Image (cartoon, rainbow, N blue to C red; front, side, top):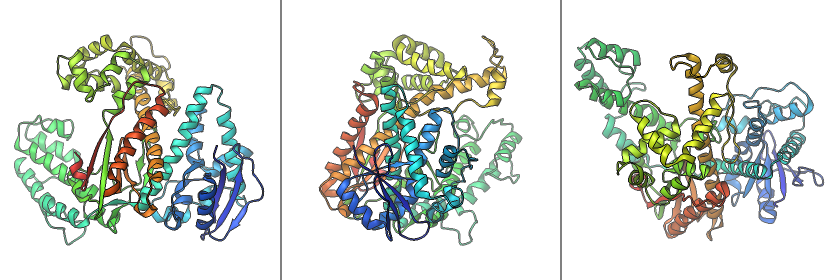
Length: 570
């Protein structure tokens, strides 16, 4: 087992303190005070390959990255681990800062977590006393050691051996994800601003000279919309005004969603769809986005690890979790380098097969296209029906024509359908469910409990209590799958990062992760190492499957492409 070293940066300046620890968190010897951290940390990493213990990864590791000769191997992120443990112990959403953990240990008032802060301000201030949330005069190193030892005790106290082993894996994977997020922000995704600018000009017209002014193409579409809907001026960015403008023409809409507009036989519907598409690009990835996020030939996303209750990542602005397909043309590898773009094929249905152990669904998932195989075995070759039915089962959809599809799935795959339906019943009854590795879903609110307390069997579908219970059932039904898929993705990231670090190349010329969203990774690699990087992705997927699901026959194939431009990957 790797040795552990606690690391506490100085609130201001490059120095800090280091403390060797036993695995249970006991201090070994005296702490070491250094005037700058990068050199001693690099030496200790090369000599001992320790697991670094710190209050939070971004402010501890991020400032070190530019000065480290190589990446650190592993860490224990107290903030992330505290959140996992609190939820597991039934205290979901309790404050998770170092100061909160210290306060709970000493019977002090627990400070609320402060709002997250972006960019340089976060790195400059997060380890100041007010960001740590420690009482005045408290030694941050003493707090790190105490909270870490407490977490190790709580992990060891999980009684079931298998549950404890899986939860420890979750803790390690969540912390490894924090390393990946910090490194992606440091390295950045290659981004050609000249290509981006040309794309925006092609789509929207020239960049407006006056900030806040609407681009020419959007202004033109807005005028065409007004003319198509009777000529009365209205704001196409206002949901209520758009609905009223359509209603004035005798067209009743419940929303401005594209799928609903496509059902409308009126020229304004197509104009509205196009306006929404371009307005979204302008707002989310337009020139203002480029000025803020695409500097120095790199887009540096700021991820929030575990930012969603299912374990999926969130982002601190910048649209890091969804780059529109058309703008992927701006993501171009450096000269002599390539991009390895890989995503897990139909991940969530495969997760359901592995979780449920349904032999029929496992056989269906053994081939390439799971939906094609499902269609051939159960839906007379109709892939759309197969996909609609399986997604409906996982997301709890019951409306429309899905009923017969679900009946077919129950007959063909009783264990898989039973698994998600049991999770739904648990949610409807106010219970909680867990991911494969032990991430815990949020409990129902007090208002939900009050509403559903007297819910009788067979409650009418229109009853608010019944609707609320079924909504929670849909949430827990999907949580067990989506959160387990997030477990798998974290294990994939950790395994892939380790393999890339082990490749025989100088650190500056080594393949490295530059983008991640849900079940897709992008690796920036020297062209001569592209095949090895692609092989590392495939091997990491196999390892993640084994770690998370054990000896399962379910395959988790990665669709992988080696390209110069991200847009060419699909």
